[in-house]
Image (cartoon, rainbow, N blue to C red; front, side, top):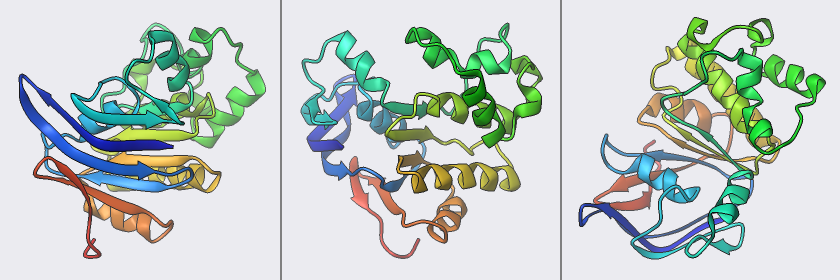
Length: 223
């Protein structure tokens, strides 16, 4: 589904990631760990075409990223949901309209019943008309998750989705991610929270990838 072959990327002529060869298969669940600045966000951006490798090849759904047009990249991203660490919303629009934005920009009308069901799934039915500034951190993260999955993506990428949440809310978000995975969505979560990873591994078969020395390695069983 997402394949890296000898991939490298860097900034200002300095390589941050190098010699990455791995494949994320359909329906898989992966965590990506590593210290701050190791390249977790960069790796995720490479996965959905926000960044291009300076060396090597990345293919997504059988298509090589290099040489793809902007329209091709846009179509590709409709199949990939992304939850950013810093959730951004349009503050003048109610929550329900913010969640439906991916449909709006794709010229698709939101099905009111399906939208209501999605908000109920993330526990935000009562906040459908609320403006984003009034939401708590946990509500914003769950809203971001709803927005990321409204197009029914085949893979979900989440960058430190629980970084600003307390443990109870982190577990609630994890439950939603596990449910998505059991429905067939591939999940890749970048996180530094080892407790979250242990909680997930008790519920689902998750593999852990670790960025070390600019390379992505399969972590050992000590996790």
